[in-house]
Length: 112
Length: 117
Image (tube, rainbow over the protein chains, first blue to last red):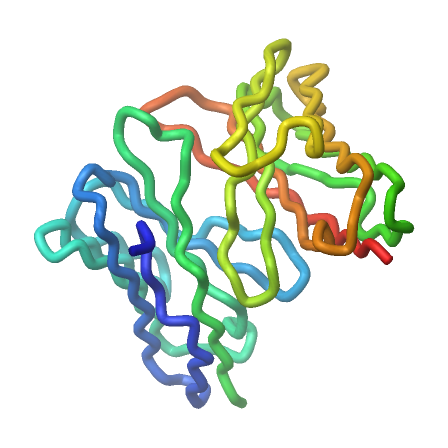
């Protein structure tokens, strides 16, 4: 079993739709949860960062962490064609923060 | 800002040759740098962690003698793929951190696409 599971998609939505991206994990020691956006042939860029459980909002993006279910989500409101990319979740343990465990990424296509 | 660059952005080489990839933190001193490998439609796989002035820590299954990492300064780490073979063709991405635990965000470079003929 992989440490982090993520549906690879692709996920295709019309412009303006609400997008929900999810990851599940098996290691209950994970405390730091990140979402990265990666455009084709580029390095990942950090979108959101959350510590422990709860919600965090930044503009059109909302990250949710449910540690009891080992489930994290990223919501994108009013999706735009420029949001089309691969979204990677990543997580790490508290005492060994340096090592990140990545999901396989979900490819999102927002159609104009 | 926290910008990480990689050079080259893409490289094609013949089987059996060695290739060096550079990773630089342009506007900060990186306490730690990481090297990842990414196959098409797959996740980033950590290859090794390196700190300036010390030997890199390699992940299980990664050959130290094949993937040589040199972290010469707080702003530069290099990955050398020795005696490259077609199966080494991949997208190699580095990242760097500038903080200390418990919070040390990783800033990623743009990646280097290696094709071994």
